[in-house]
Image 1 (cartoon, one colour):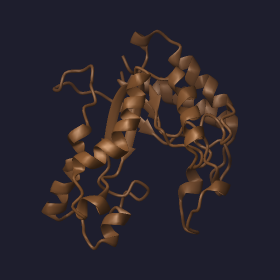
Image 2 (cartoon, rainbow, N blue to C red; image 1 turned 180 degrees about the vertical axis):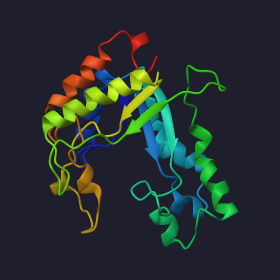
Image 3 (spheres, one colour; image 1 turned 30 degrees about the horizontal axis):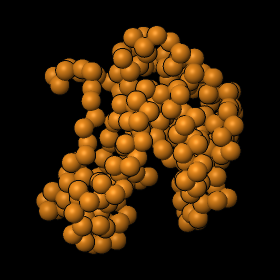
Image 4 (spheres, one colour; image 1 turned 90 degrees about the vertical axis):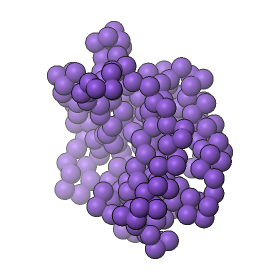
Amino acid sequence: MGFSAIPPRNDQAVAIQAIDIWSRRADAAIISLEPPWAELLAGTDPATLVRVVQLPLATYYRSKGHELWIYLDPGNGLNRAGESDPLAAAGHSLTEPAVQMLGTAPMVFSRASRRTSPTSRSSRSSEGGWTSLSLGAIVSSQDAQRRYIVRHMELLDRASAIGVFQLTFTDLDLAALSLPADSIVPLFAYNGLVDANLQPKPALSAWDEAFGRPLASRALY
């Protein structure tokens, strides 16, 4: 069970504070990212990118005893039907063999351990979560979000899942973010288990209840 390092706003101190809070209720940490296409296309050494950008965060996670899971998304994380924005802006496409080769380069640092054999079938969940606030046609509440977490854990138990990640631990501070008018990020702004000021919401207690179970009976074993 674990989270990612997405902070409520671009503030390193707040980001570290959030990690310190969720690390007490997590076995693992996830780094979910797109390949740094602009830098790779410019010829930057992938090992340098990993060492400078990703290694410090990975080291910080490991200092807390977390397993490290790496998810590399070659497409557009916010638009599954589209190309990565930096890749498209450079006039390239993931359909190009040379680009595909570049996209595998950042995996040099991806050594996420698993507790199942390579040939076994296993389920894991990496979710943005459920909003605690009604948004447009989506009707929700903090209690609905709590019930979502409870139900999610029940389904993962039935599937004998080996891992679950709630990508956003905190809400997003929209007022502090510079977003384009057509951004879909606001739809995910209230998925956190704590608000943008790191104050707990009811869903956090549901997560904590699941995490408090003996390790062998939880999703990640």
